[in-house]
Amino acid sequence: MVATLGIVALGCYAYGLYLSWKRLNDTRKSDLVGPQAGERVIAVLTLIALISHSIVCYGLLFTQQGFDLSLVTVSNVVALIMLWVVALANLRIPVANLYLFLFPIAALTLVAGLTTSPSGEIDDFTLPLVIHILLSLAAYSTLMMAACQSGLVAIQERQLKSHTMGLNHILPPLESMERLLWTMLWVGMVLLTAAILSGFLFLEDMFAQRVVHHTVLTSLSWFVYLFFIAGRYLFGWRGRTAVRWTLTAFGLLVLGYFGSKFVLEYVVS
Image 1 (cartoon, rainbow, N blue to C red):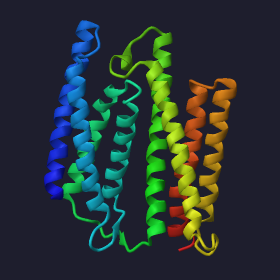
Image 2: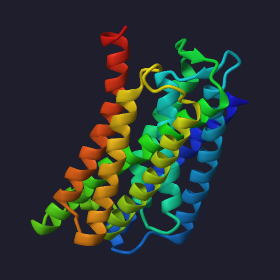
Image 3: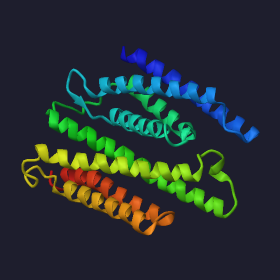
Image 4: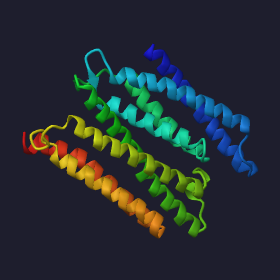
């Protein structure tokens, strides 16, 4: 069942990538928006791939032995969440060209998930902890996309000012990219807030469970994101300012995870 759905998802990713590339080339030649029929086919293929990949991810995460948090499984979850966010945003914002980047990433992680066995990082977690981990993964994935998105927006702005095309041939319009960036930031903030709150459901003693550094850095990242979003609405921060604040907040988030892992494994072990 899982293997069959994986093959279906891979086929949809491959054909969707071909149609997206073809649509982009047709748009360049005619200076017109791609055919609506082609857009609908890509949308249907994306939906089938997302549903199939989601079921495969569920099978990878929840094994008979327990909850699998191996690198391959986590990579599948991250890639899937990234694609879901863009697919849902594409209902309101024309950002379908980003599938040219996301379809190959999702397909590669899916192939790895179907062809490798669990690495042994399997635990029997409680339900609240599983929910917290999944919310954290969703938040990290969305905010990682926002960090990359802010860099792409800054590059687009620089290229427009210098009257060079560069990535503008492939990427959606700058206005759409900025709207997507803020959509990602808001979704990421909601997920990060839920992840932080859910953490306190099972966190009995912060110091005894040795996660104080993780909690402090993650909370600090949350405040930086909140400060930046407020600055955006109050002072119109964008461009390089947006890149700096977004990368700073995401850097704290990454440091909160990998830093705590380093402390636990090498400092206090």
